[in-house]
Length: 242
Image (cartoon, rainbow, N blue to C red; front, side, top):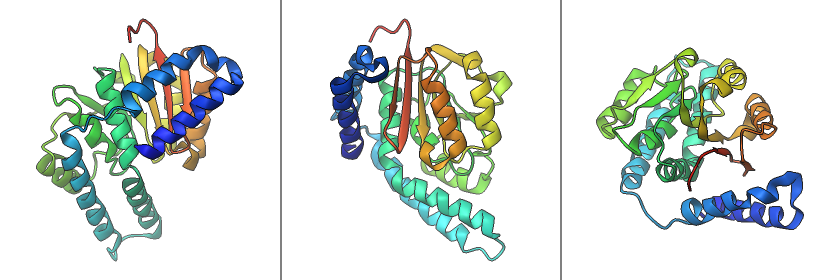
């Protein structure tokens, strides 16, 4: 978490110094994140198993890349998946900590491909259903091996946009389908709870996702938006006691 913590502290200092765009009045949210999420020293029991299984997932995807039946487009896509897995540990742990801290009741993951982040989201509380949009549940063989057999995860369910309501925590991946990102941009006000936390993964590697992030930055619904290059966080804390 040290790299992410550094990025947040750097931006907090910048906010204090320049008070740009009215963010000064929202500094308590940034301080809250540093103290209770980024700076938390608790090590959750699930992190060890999740990291070990991450390494297994990388091996499985590398093995899939070697298939002679794989076309160039699919091979490039799998390589991007591997990059996300190798670089994503800190962001996935941050997502776990955010969900745990804000006591999330109805989380949503939007993404295609393997989407290992959803393992961290599902492990926060096995009693809570994690909803998914995209094709991240279609690779039955790898999903069964990783999520069910290896991590004993049974609380993930596919959903459609028209079925969403009262979502209080959302993660959207840079590998999400562009059509799903556009749908999110159009409909997020209809299905997000008044209190909600949104996390954009690797948005700078997907121009469509980056545009969605910029749109949210202009929405007064969100009390705080933070861009740390590898992750963007938008928080709406209406009626929140924390």
